[in-house]
Image 1 (tube, rainbow, N blue to C red):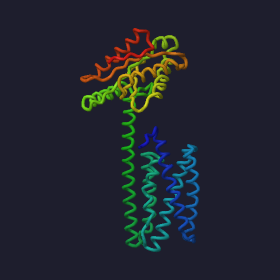
Image 2: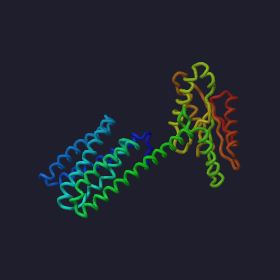
Image 3: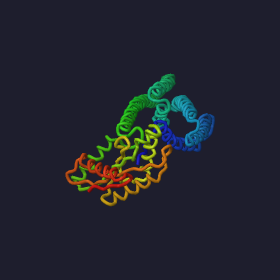
Image 4: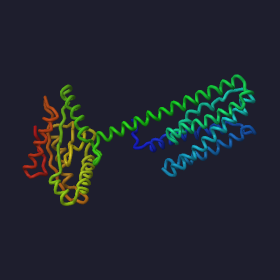
Length: 345
């Protein structure tokens, strides 16, 4: 199951935590398989420095320590490694042996992605172009002494690099658009105070439930409840305490529910639960929630009670008819002394 992340930074950290160990293993493998001579000494030294630093940076990121410093330090080291390794490959391998860049090109997409992850869309684009131009100038300097195979390898590298930069730049816009849509959806469907579903979301749930009931005979129940004498809470303690009571009640109820129930705020101090249970089972659930609420001590307001109206879906029901029955049950409780559960069949 895919994890939903609360922020882009948390997503970035998770990517780093998965990617960095792969890079470290690759660096260690590359180091162990090298014959350390004059030609490979530079690469051997850089590999060891990167291995140590990436291991430390993984620990920092895992513990959520020094995150900006770790990101920009990694960026500096990766950039230095990328440019110097490219220059070393061109000067010491392609010029001498007439070969290609080899496995250097394999890591290029990850390096470009790293630039965008660390710097964001616009700065990542500018930085990637600067690094690209740097390597481009380095390659052009030796173009006159390179073999046909080496020139072809350089050309493939440059064109591929440009493609990665363009794709990642527009991919960042796609991700941003998706994130904006998710944020809009979150604000559109969830109550800003209690962070549970709002009336718009509840209406969608009820429409879907009624459709399934008509097509598949999958019955369901609703529990409609509100806080007794809530106006006196606002009058006696102020609206701030009143809001805190609503948040506290929403959290308290949500802790008691399982995956079969959908829970939202209908408006004001009114809440609704949509349950796949039926009849007495739903009444028992409402009664359990009533007792839990009555036994709870609300910060700043003390003991409070709630009244519950319960009903079950019927053939031919609409949202209005369903809610009217639940509302009727709720007002029966109010007329009989409150702090009760009333079931309307």
